[in-house]
Length: 125
Image 1 (cartoon, rainbow, N blue to C red):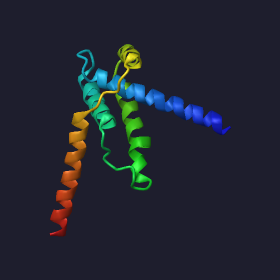
Image 2: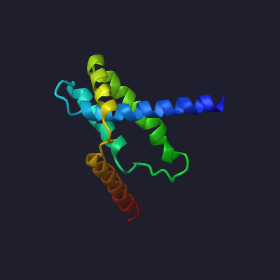
Image 3: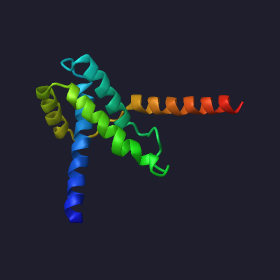
Image 4: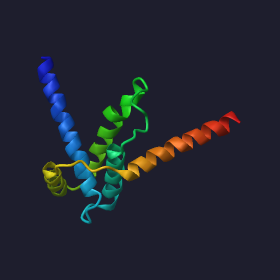
């Protein structure tokens, strides 16, 4: 029973990884609708960022973004992209050997942490 659940989880994780790369590709494609491009770029930038908005060492909340926020963002972006285009982007993503890295996502997360720190200092003063 546990083996079946583990295999399903692994398959789900592989699909998520492929979809993040497909969204990264979609965000750069001129055929992608503007709103879908914005959502896809945001989700891909955050998911591919080397930093998390909520660090994983924080109990429960640290994994909330990985288990809830990113998959929901992926679902929204995929719904906004026309089916034939998403099929093409997924096929291209499946053929990629290397996962892209998002510098924009890194900058966003660092900016959020700096804003939080500035707000905390302001509140304490």
